[in-house]
Every structure is written in C-alpha cells, then in structure tokens.
Amino acid sequence: MILGDFLLELPEYDVVVSSTPTENRITCWIASAEGKKFGVRAKFLAQQTSGSLATVFVDGVSCRPYVVPPGWVGTLERTYLSNNYFQRDLMFSQLELTDDDSMLDDRTSNDIGQIVVEVALGKYTLREQVVSFQNVKDRTLRVREGKVHERSKKACSHRVAFGEEVPNQDPVSTFTVIRDNSPRTIFVFKYTRLDILQAMGVAPHTPITAETETEDYNDENENEVIDGPNESSPSDDVKPLARIRELEMELQRLRAQVEDRKPSHVKLEHGGSRRKKAVIEVIDLTED
Image (cartoon, rainbow, N blue to C red):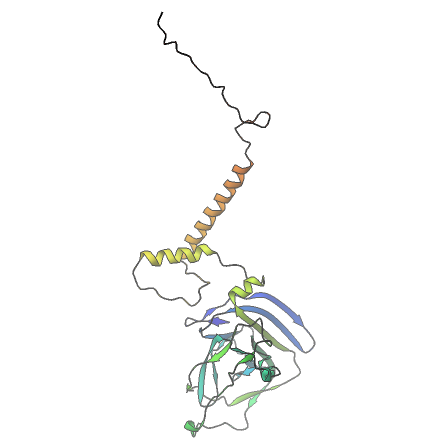
C-alpha cells in the first residue's frame, strides 16, 4: 500500500498467510490517515506462463482491473477509481455514523475497512468488443458514500472516499483474461487509525521523542516546512536525533535504578538517626 502525495509505502502489521486449494490469502493491517490519498502497488517479480488479471476492491467497490500479458514483469499502481470516461482519486475519510435503525441491515457497509487485491490467472485473449469514448458528457462515475449505522462498524474510524471526477485518459485494453482453475492470490489490507492499531497491540507505539524533536526544530526555525506524507514517519534527518534522545532517556532510567539499589550511607541505630548530644557551656559572669 502507498500513501500520500509522494506515494510512500506503508508498513504492514500482523501479517497472516493462509492457503486453500482455491486461493492463497495474505491478510494484514495498515494505518490509514484521514484526508490522505492512497493507492495499491502490485509487483510482478516472476514471469507467468498465463495471463494475469489484477483487481482492486476498496470497501467492496471494484476498480478497473489490470490485464497482464504472459511473461510480463514489472510494477502496477492503482490510485483511482475509473470507468471509460472519468476517474476519481482514492483517499481516506472520516466514517460518518448514524443511529437510524433503518440502516442497521444495510449490507453495503460490510466491506468498509478493508482493501482487497485479487490476482487471478487464465487465458490472455482479445476482447470481443471495445467500448468507444463517445458521449463523454453523459457519463458519470457515481459511488454510494452514505452514513453507516453506529453498531455496524464500531471499531472502524475511516472509510474510502473518492475525489472529484476528472477525464480518464487511460486507453481501453483490447485484451482480457479468461480465468482458469488456478488458485487465486488475495491480499487483504484492513485499515484504521494508527492510534487504534497501537491500542489493539497490532502496531508499535511511535516514539514521542521523534515528534518532540521535530516540534522543537520547527519552533526555532522560521523556514518553510514541507508537510510529510505521514506523521508517523519522521524524516531521515530527525531519526538520528530522536534515537540519541531515546538512548539518553534510557541511560537516565538505568542510572536511576542503580541509585535506588545503592545502600544508604546513613546508619540508623535503634530506629533513630544519630544525633550529637547538645553541649551547654556555662560562663560565670560573677565577680570575685
């Protein structure tokens, strides 16, 4: 998965691999960020003797599949929803909830919270008919993005939203893949906020020192600051300073433990502290 305007790869947490005679499934968690664009990056590292059909589903909505010819090796990216006429960027947004019980049985929300990539093998062949690009003004790309009942997705804070419609300039493939009986490969990316993943014990806690170091730097310098793609991924310049601060704090903690274990230098006798007896000197002021 890739996130932000710079399309940086997201870390994957709690990866689980399972296999059946019909599919190979890889499931993991990723951290979503509200208002950030995202995409799916698929790498074909080895040549296949068959054609491949790679399809991305976002919250259950199917994106246009990639048709991969036999023997092809490379990287594919899907960052938008499209049809023959328009495309809309993929992004994360806040999940809006409602207490309207009429929407409690709405099954369209079942797939909210996960992004699925399905790769199927089959025969690579020509399409029977190619759709033309006529009457573009009469075509739209509409997707249902309504509210969700509050009891249907309690642990989900985000959902996939779509950007404004823009003309789609991608050519229509003249080929397709007729699936065979080969096992499918399915990647499931479950997503939610990073702090929720940390509370679940799925993602490690982000060191506070990295954020503090960045804030200190920004306060002392009035230069223009470029907003990074992910708050949880500090720049390479900040990481060494954050690590130094973290080691210093660890050293102070260990020193404190050593000091607590040292024997006391003050010896108490009979439960009381040692005190010097008071000495009173009497000066005779009388005259002989």
